[in-house]
Structures are given as structure tokens and as C-alpha cells.
Image (cartoon, rainbow, N blue to C red; front, side, top):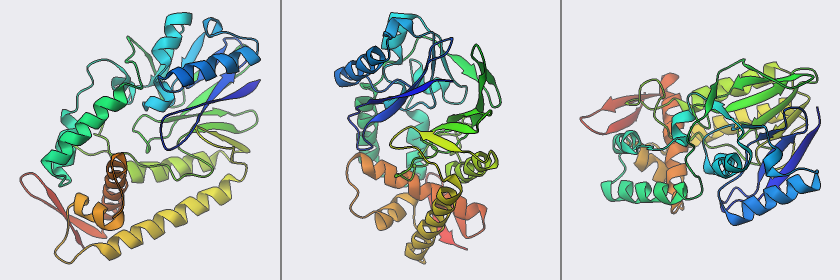
Length: 314
């Protein structure tokens, strides 16, 4: 299997996104980059260096529903007519008529002030400018085999960063395309999301993420190709480092939790006092994910009021 990485710029703090071309039949892209002029130019140039055009692409696999990974998909489809594959749990987020209502309810429960929620909704609308909704997708599930002429990639559902995040495993040499589940120099954010099974509930992102990491570890991967940055060649060490980071972050958070308790929003402001703009949402996402995980381990209890939740040390 011939794999080529194309670095595509993004307007986000995370930096360029890794798009992978699988130079086998059918010619396949794993992710595509955000909807910007710079991104489409970089994607075209990367394909041209490898002797291809956008029109040659026969299949697109989207690892998760974030604009830096799927934003250009509609543009690419308009040139090549290729099907777009994505996990069923993330599919609604890339289709038209995405609704903010479920997020608004989660933000209210987290104690976010209403004027800040309005700003976050406006921010989401701005983010949508970096991604065209798709007219249709083909959904994939865990353990599905994505066939090529001579071999296949196995879908590994790795929820955490988003509910429908997937990795792709080449079992013949234990190489894994991990997207944002494993990144060499960045700790992925367990982004606040509604539960795909029950939109009224909060997705238990950190607990699911840790299970996903353990599942990837069970493959004994020889090479991890992430969605940003360099490859990971020492996943066992990387796994232990991530686990220690998670324990340290949770200990710090619980140490900052006042005796009277706090909303997730209040706790996030204590944990990340300098966060600004979109980073306040990311700070809240990480904080509430840690609080939910602490509750699952009986380290905190959740007092549920008519609208807000208060977290208390157990």
C-alpha cells in the first residue's frame, strides 16, 4: 500500500492538517482539509506532485466531523464524484441543517452565561464557513473493511475527540491512521458533544477516549500516522505519557474545586484562567470531560438543578 502525506494549511491554532493519499485502486483520500483557498491550492499541488488531479479521486474517508478534516469534501466531490465515508455518529454534523439546540442545552447545564452561549453559537457559525455541508455520505461502522485492490483498511471506532472519530488499521504491518485520536505533540481535546444516542445527554468523551487509546494499544501498532504533526513510532511510551497527563490534569482540577462545589464553567475558569475566545470552549470541554470521568470513578458527585449541574467532591 503506497501512502503519501500531503500537508494542508488550516486557519486554526493546531496548524496544518495531514491529508493522506492511498495510491491504490480505488485512489483514496483520508481527510481533505478546511474550505480555504490556501487549503485547496495545497491539496491540488500535493496531488499534482504525485501525478494526480482532484478528478482522479475515487473515494474520500473522513475521520471525524471537524472543519479542518472535512471542510473541502464537497469541493472535492464536485470535481471527482467520489463517495464520502464517515462514521454514522459523526455523519449528522457534516450534513445540512446542523442544529445548535442540543449544544445550547449542554452549555446551560454547564453553567455558561447566556450571553457567552450566544457568542459561542456565533463562533460556531463562523467555523461553518470553513466547511461546506455535504449533500450525502456513506456511513461506516466499527470493524468495517474498506477494500482496495490488494488489501484493506479496518475501521476502528475511536470515540473521544468526537463521538464518531475513527482510526484506520492496516493489519498486515499494524500501521494505524489515528487522525486526532493520537497526535505526537498535542494532547487531543475531548470536545463537548451531545451523546449521539440521546442528544439530551452529554457524551462521556474522556472515558471513551481512554478506552479508545487502550484499544489502539491492543493492536501493538508499529506506526501511528496522525491528523497533525509527525508520526508516532513509540506508541506504548506515548500511551503512558498521555495517561499520566490525564491523571495529573484531573488531580489539579479536583484540587481547585471549592468546597461549595462549582459548575463546569466555574471550574474551567479556575483551571484555565487565561483562556480567551474559542479556547474558552475548549477549556470547558476538557474540564467537563474530566469532571464526568471523575464522577464515573466516584471522586465527585453531580447535583442536578432545574438547569445547571453543580460538581462536588465526593
